[in-house]
Image (cartoon, rainbow, N blue to C red; front, side, top):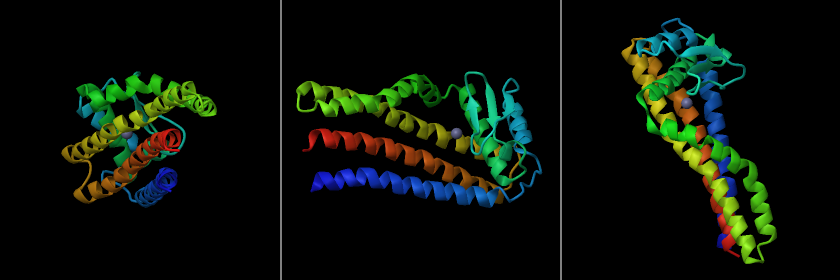
Length: 229
Ligand SMILES: [Zn+2]
């Protein structure tokens, strides 16, 4: 009974947290994309201003298709902003642009979790691509000891996804903290606007927490299936 309940919570809890995160992001974005920022600048203008203020003139700005596709590329020193952020003059655009600048400043400061996250990407890609097949093969052979060993290797490969999501958490929280400090210290956002920025970035951070819970629960689920029979 207990293993069944544990297995069920490993499946249900991540789904519920993901749905909550999705709803929080959607409501925060819908609200603050309509609130104009007091500076009247676009996300691209704010990002350029903040980058230059931190001696990051070499970081290039680019527009990227999609929604919430904004990211900083540390390999090529490019900050890519989605159309709603690049061209938007909203509190949402200011918050997301400043958050991405936060990542560029992490890179400049030699912030170790950022490098760790970049360094483990190839391992995570390999782990997420082959772990399902290794786990399936291991479970199929699990009446033999070798099957248990293969399944365990599969779970370890899958655990790289959980590791990646754990390393992502400090990177994202730190970038949001830097974003709020930059917007305040450079006089771009008012105190009320910082509250809006907070709501948007907190909601976005919840999606990373949801991904971490999902990946960790997945590891526990496979371990339970393997060892509790
Ligand atoms: Zn980020």
